[in-house]
Length: 137
Image (spheres, rainbow, N blue to C red):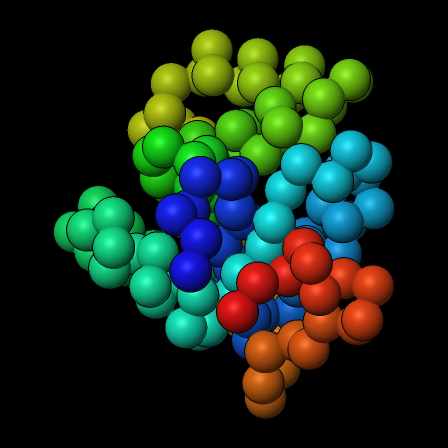
């Protein structure tokens, strides 16, 4: 089992919005820096348990970001993911100038309504053979 030292986007595998975000990130991540694991996967569950992250992520079930050392939640996760994409996308980290409570209000509003707005799948996505190395668990 990996020691969880690489950047991993953890996402709700049954959420259409989250799956759409993963598809976009797979296209934008030209250097293949990011790995992905659905929160429903054994891989994600093992990461969360082994790093004792349960308390920090309690109640968050949409998108999280493990940078190899620590977990980022809510709007911080989104900003950190953008930073890993490099080039133009790093500029989005300027979002940190907006106070976190304000950023997280928007994040929470979208996360709370994501199934209603974007729908839900019956099961997590299955990676294609060419994506197996990037989609874990």
